Image (tube, rainbow, N blue to C red; front, side, top):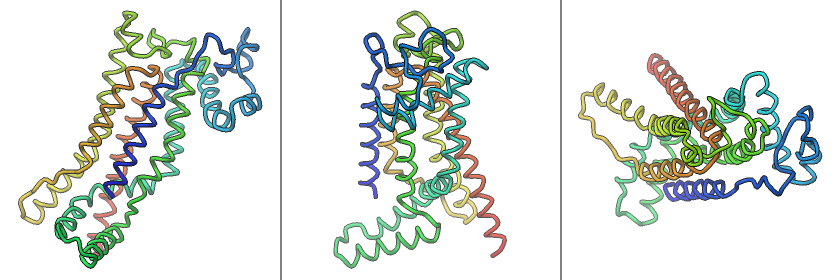
Length: 302
């Protein structure tokens, strides 16, 4: 299972590195920005038709990138580009939560039972014969069944999110509202590095807030599991022994890569990431609350 997680992590890192190199050339390519038809004076220089996008760029741009860009363009005149990105992000994450809620619950349960999985693995440590390996696998599968956990649930959630992340990255670069609009007096089209170089230190604020929310969203599940383990140890009058999560080092690497890339992608994408991380925090707390209530009901019926 750990090998599969490492491979998944490498896939995510490759995706992020690829994204960082996918900038949109705007000076020589007229078919770059997506705008609404009613935007004056630019009909001959932008793609505004769904069918045109489909014919020239294929299904991914037409199905994912184009609608997100146009949604941002449509909302901006009623609010501003920052609020438009906020509303789009809330909509996307709301839909994703409805689609992947069960998988998210399974992922959180998977993290909770990780110490038990490790105890089983330590029980058979050094035993490489087929019979021992089969017994270990059987015990782990029995544990998964007990907690109704699918170890591949995290893969489903991650791969569903893949095209959304790519589409959002492209959409914020190609939305007319982002290219020509401002939020808090700054352009969200610029990268944080470009903004800082231009003397706009508010870009540091965007990056710092993203750092805080990103770290919090990734470490919160670990903190909740630690708190739960301490409470169970106190309940059963036994000393609490902290177990190391083998994926923590990989999480730190992934976190560092995301933050480095955040300096080089449009600030609009950083804004999207801030909102997504905040939603992830709320989602984690909500799922934890539901799981705690479910466990209390089960204990009450025993």
